[in-house]
Image (cartoon, rainbow, N blue to C red):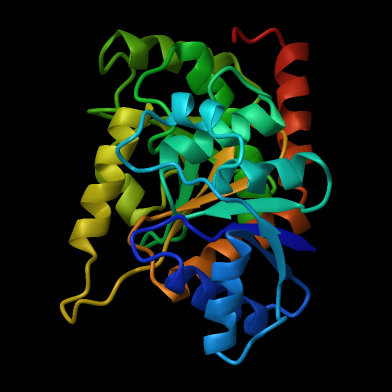
Length: 304
């Protein structure tokens, strides 16, 4: 399995990315990491670490900055590292792409290279809740949405939960301000009705604490604005007193390939964890499972 890793993504790139690639290679011998970025720079960093020739290198000379408008920059910079990484997946040279750079640029690159399975792809994370892991999405791919889009997010989230968590029939909840039917704004009310008709094990509304505590739903769906706010709140509450980090990654669901996004401040260990998440998604056939779930949705005529 080959995973294309954006060498220049992240606040401490490229050093932390190279170190993360080395950790991933040591812990997952069945995964070949392909470093995408300026070859001369990659060679120097590997030489300094006594790892010359350890990885295949693919040259890419442009970088999408955090202050650039992502979609515009990705289209303008055809040789951007994140765009080349996704192109390798599109062309079959790699089975997954990973970046800890700009989330917007990663999403735009994935959509451009791999195409959409749904109208608005969603970023999903696995929250290590007290009673068991919970898949939360969308956590920031887009800030708004429609009821039909939330249904599609629920379908691909359930498919991912089946693959990543080994659940045969994952429970899906809708994030809301209360558990009772009829709660929330128009989006939540419309989504509730649509989810009742979807080919899912829909358990109704859940609240924010249910994501951190777990137990009520295996998948929690919401819009990208609310999901991002909740995720960052959970991360802040779980920051260790000794300054250590809780490595996490998000997978982009709803595109025609595997694309994983990490925090811009990701350490080498977190980069390696992102590579591991990408490898797991490939092994478990996440894209094929999403496609099957969406085909079932279309057969049951749920609005999209």
